Image (tube, rainbow, N blue to C red; front, top):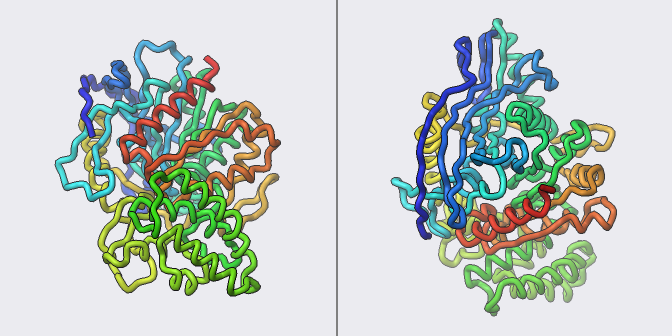
Length: 530
């Protein structure tokens, strides 16, 4: 990967820190703070810097800080969350006119250092494309693909993650504990999380006078169902129309997840929707019996088989005749490289963990889940499923070290605080009852939320991005979800798709990151109405 020169100058200014501001007395393992009944105030540290994108220097102001959320969004009510963010504003831009993009990772409950340091922030950490990145020191460079050339950027950490913390303000310890449980139950949930983000965005628009800016959401992984619910809340309840929503590594319906599908007998879509991703990974690792030279034309054939003979065979269940079952197994072997006998023994149903364990089993290796171009030693060569994700093991240390150094040194925030990669959530509540939703039990499905948001605002554009080598959120499942939105047919024209020869974290591969930047920047240019 090439290095780009960067000029970076630092001018630190502490703002919005009243003398009466108190830090929490203690913090439990879930990232909830038990605060004294005093002033819990927003904080901000302002710095300045520059980044070079496409040969053009962009000078910007950065603010790393917190906004305080309150029950019901009422600033006079009890505080519930101290929400951490980093905002980048291009200098000399017309105040309030430039597009603003709100960016977050998924989890649920993940910090947003991945998109910050890997995709669109002004600095980017260098990691290996498909092998384990060597230990520190790590290389951090000018991000030539930062989205600051197209929009002002706001990276947001979910409640309980990063420097974001749940708050419980009370004198009495018993009352504080009760408040903690109450806030955890409400916020660590599908709708509570989205309401928290909506409240954050409303506050941000007021604090920085950005109400009349073109507005965008960018979510990755679980950030995509968050975006579906959040877009609906902002537009339906708050009457804040969005210009666009960008989905990266989308999953809107957990029934279509290839991981854990065996817990839902009779729900077969996940198997045929994951097949193209399995085929892409087998192609990448040269495990196909007859490997074509080009990936995309090959995948078109796999997709046709997945929706046709494979789906038909699965829905027949025990009524499938042996000859057809044999023929389908042999075709699956051609598309995945897995042995016919193994496929038959699995009754044509290979889940994600099984595929990742078996593809390279002859070498005693497993492939990654989110980035299946990565591989690593199998922890249990005789097991049924892969027991870890080699990609996570390969790159996480680089992101953790690079971001902690950057946020504390360059942005000047968090010196005495612990940056949590993930909120410690015991159970994420996805059950919901409202005027538009039935109770979903233990399966998340927000296809209806996105459909309602697009219907309420027929000008809303949605851009979907995915990696061919992502078996955690397969690209073909995202296509299937969008094709099944209950919206007028004409609104399907508002959806665009981009697929990359990369994994879940598309930006971990530099060539894919370059294309991702180009596609998102063009999307903003075409929809900002400026």
